[in-house]
Length: 48
Image (cartoon, rainbow, N blue to C red; front, top):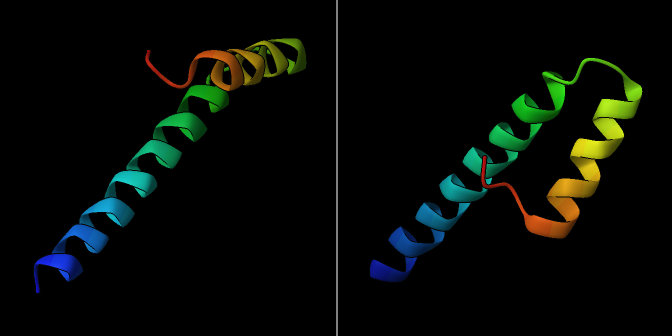
């Protein structure tokens, strides 16, 4: 039961992170900004 809870919690966290990355990229002003943001995520992760 505890393992199931941890698995579901991990899935929830992954989905939340994916939504945050998507929202961050969606706020880009143009293609160059999207690319800059993608590189920043790749280098540093999402911490904005």
